[in-house]
Image 1 (cartoon, rainbow, N blue to C red):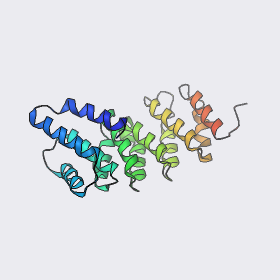
Image 2: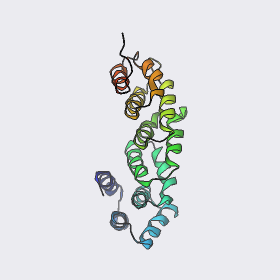
Image 3: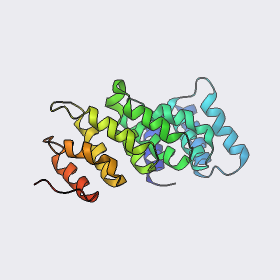
Length: 203
């Protein structure tokens, strides 16, 4: 397990209050570190569906299943990708990137382009960039276009789109990146992304 899991484990330790929760925490972390045997995966899968399980337990189980490429983690991780807590979103994005489920890009694109969930779109945008899926460029382009108003409060989401489009290197992004170059908070990043795409500099 890497730093993403260590960050999750550290956060979950603080949420696991009481002796019973602490014992469950220790057991789930041990399972998630090496989810190889079928019985171990079944136990983690039950955590995702049993009533009354705390959110931190579901997170650990879903992360462990994702690292084992077990697609039963998908629905839980997508819900966490859209969580109000940015740390949970980041953990879910890291796990989804490992899971390799073909539904991931479509789900991330739906979250990134939903105007009612813009405040929570940062990690779906970053996940789309990492996936380099067919849905990535259209979703990032549509999201960025919607956020180019001068006083839009979600300029950090727009910045992630600008940087992601530059990293993806698709010429379809040139028009929206050119428009983003006129946005004071996006100008430098948009120019850098256009340069990566080989677009002509501003005259």
